[in-house]
Length: 113
Image 1 (cartoon, rainbow, N blue to C red):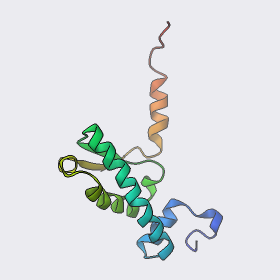
Image 2: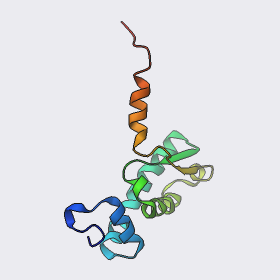
Image 3: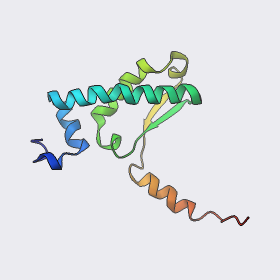
């Protein structure tokens, strides 16, 4: 909370910086969250037989330390045949991705039934 100025001002970036600096509370939160993400993503990779996983979104784009922890946990949580060919990348559009898709979808012709 010291990094943010107050409890109501805490963001994922603050928690991530605190975890990277060894703050017990922040580190325990990320330590609990990273394996949960990894299990969910590992299962999706195994079911979809994906060769590429793109990590991003509001939380992960602001938490590089958490991303590193998820990548480590992903190696454990994902079945080896699915993990070996997998490449993991960070999203480049960040929070703009959803709004870009919405704008692009408006350009598509509308179907009349």
